[in-house]
Length: 353
Image (cartoon, rainbow, N blue to C red; front, side, top):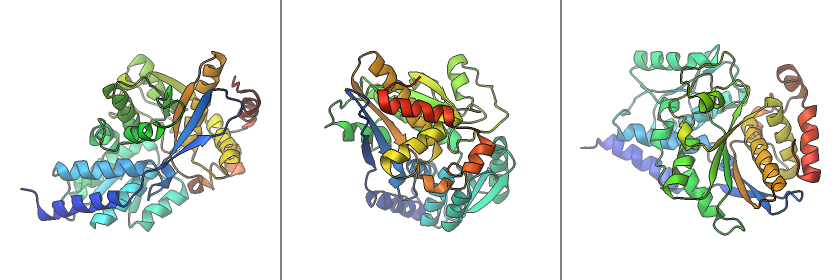
């Protein structure tokens, strides 16, 4: 029999979901592309400002229904920021203590948002240390380690039930090319790409999934060599995506194609996108969009038509001290000139080489 508190907790999360509208699908106006439409699913409009709001909701429901979370259970999560913000929101909703274990390089704005929702931040030197430290805290506090990197692909119902893939195809249904040629996604846990890839197959849709990986991440290499033991010494500079180890939630079998995107390309792309949208987006959006532009340019060169959908993962307002700070860019990434020139040429000709 379900405990009364757990019953109430699930009801609170469901009520919160019912109060939330779906996120917008934005069509980019790109005159250089002929017969190819590019769309951005804007996940920054969730209550906690990112794609991870969906994941956090699913993880809490999964843990509650598995009997892992009881009244008063401390929640611990390893995160570079956005998932922790969303989980702090749901922990506050349920009256539970929350601790985020994160690298000390995490953007200041994300730390402030976790604190705003009543969460605590526990810092480690390197992103590879977050797993063991989260497990240690959960043991010591008799808490629950949410472990997004393991459970992201399991907690979401990939067959439908208003997951992100279901939402994308519903919103695309009245567009000129309603079945996208490509959906482009970057992996953090790998859970969203698993959900989208599985949904495409289950619904028998003629779309392909392209996963774009940043520098200092192992997913691209793992996709090609299937060596689950590979690691990367340096952490990704694109917060929220890229991992130093192969995460259990990354499912390479649902991916049709992978691209490696330079960090400087990602940052140059969010600057370019700001001129089109009039607002800032996070760096992972730049990774997504640069990959989508590469595919669009390739389609145009082959005389193909169709649509491509990718994601705005979060707002750029969280990164004013990093990705929108010229000094930080110069010190951490270097010159963006090469990719700024490539994007300018794409705007003129639709070519990206």
